[in-house]
Length: 84
Image 1 (cartoon, rainbow, N blue to C red):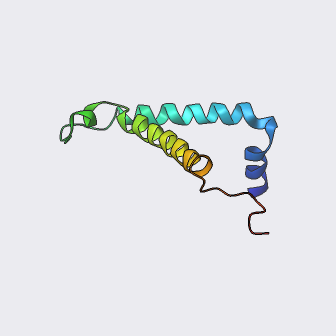
Image 2: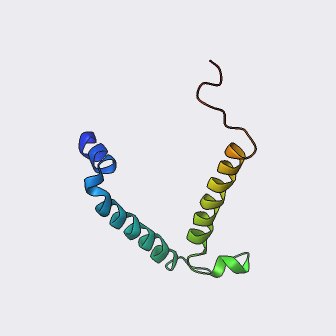
Image 3: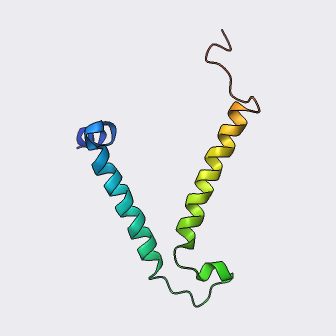
């Protein structure tokens, strides 16, 4: 079972299928957000359907770019042979 899962996520043969599965999951997450009652939302943006998914995706993108900036531009990342 594990071998099939590793093969599915590691092989280029299944790249299109993985992408389709990814998009399906995104659609299901946003669609499920429309089913949540918003009667007691504390902030106005909490009433917008799909806001949590968009906010989470945007946060991940910002986190990736900030970490790349800190690693490459600020100098936190070192060469592989730094300690040799």
